[in-house]
Image 1 (cartoon, rainbow, N blue to C red):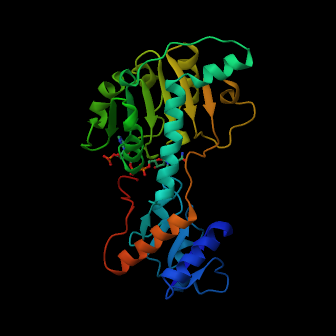
Image 2 (tube, protein in one colour):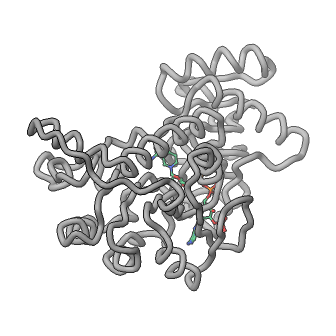
Image 3 (cartoon, rainbow, N blue to C red):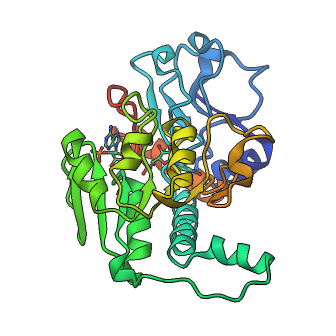
Length: 307
Ligand code: NDP
């Protein structure tokens, strides 16, 4: 029984130390060239490795990231579990990024950076937090953590999920029928949805039109959820006031892409959050122990839902 770490060596070294310390009976390898594929029980990887059928005794594929849209799940045998990364480091970084983005939009930071470049000393109107309605697309692990971090500022919150959810202090909407009323009460929209066939292209012109005039977007889900032309049109018409974009399709964007130089867009290169090896190794080890105890791993992906 062997664990194959199929990712970058730097993080692999941290994982190797943690496995040697906390799971010494499970051989941990980064190079499988000398191994019989039938020994491999667990793989940690970003996406489906080639020739997966070689690993006839594979039980769990752990994704090194929180999203699993890059997997070709149809190539994973149905008896193999796919587990996304659920670990404290990803959560903390996402809380930081979204807090940074929301406060930057709330307090007009982009406009002040522009004014500084022109040596313009002028105050801009600012709403009180209680009037700045935050709406989150998704109410999963990351959305909930972001809400907890933002709560002390006093923003009113709503969230939209696939199934009916309840979360303290949040107006909860769900399903296709809940989307329009959710958007109508949202001034800063945060996308924290997984990429699935249902969420692909969701951030389009129709969705932007359903937001109140002057609303802003924080996009930290996945690039293929956003229609770039529709965003530019909504910003240029003045219907949307700004956007903070961390994910795009493709990544990276070409140097000519309009997002780089748009005065209302803040663009970052998919850095909102990243798996931290110390905490991630702990999470994977705990999951292997759960599996050995006959429990489902935390972060088990439902292949029918796609997340
Ligand atoms: P979860 O699986 O915990 O939560 C997903 C949420 O999205 C759930 O509330 C789910 O609804 C909702 N949802 C899914 N499909 C739909 C739909 N069709 N309509 C409405 N709601 C839907 O995911 P996480 O919070 O852990 O992560 C969310 C995403 O964030 C990841 O999939 C990844 O794409 C992205 N991400 C981005 C990073 C970055 O650096 N930019 C880093 C990490 C993640 P329900 O509650 O009903 O199931």
